[in-house]
Image (cartoon, rainbow, N blue to C red):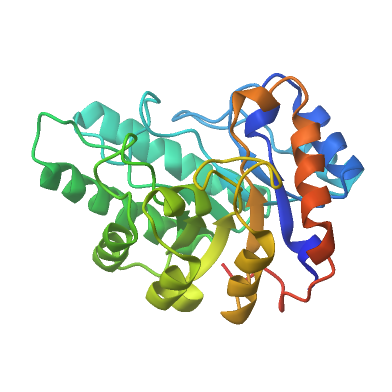
Length: 286
């Protein structure tokens, strides 16, 4: 498939617009896939349930946009922490992500985005690690049973002490040990850690099934063409390794909030020389 058919928009920077605004602008920018972040004003999801998926499916049909990944709100200060310590919060988090898996199944969406969660600074890091492993294993097994895959990314060191590097991701992946867990490469977190795309493929191979594809200085979650990364070099690395997933434009800068579609358009203009690049098979491998 061409790169154009593998790009997914993300609604994080559309937080001051409606979900329909997001879908309409994706269509206008020639983007036919979406990674749906579950902010309450776009898609309500909590430990009690999730909103009717019918209207969301109607938007997919109306604008020709296919949701390929559902990414629940998570991490500090959100209440749903995959390494939660309080028994009540553990139960809430388990139900919350279980509902995300069920909602993804209803939306015929094959992936749910996760991280490691976070631990308290005042406790041994190993304790939070154990809780994260246990929660991720249980959720990954449930996801696999429903035909859904959890795709896990690293976070920034300021966001968690648990999984914020390639080495910690490798260890977590081994310990969770579930066919329902695969890897999401976030270029922003990767750049902060001083790692390379090739190092990630050397570590995970075909278990790397998704990417948050962003520009930066060199880190960040910026629109392509506003940072220092070379998209041609990055895409060549993915192509060389037979990558079969999608490229989500996870654009997070607050400067994008007023006119988020302009950041998407900037990325598409910058990527234009490579949009016809043959990237191999469809991303429906997760």
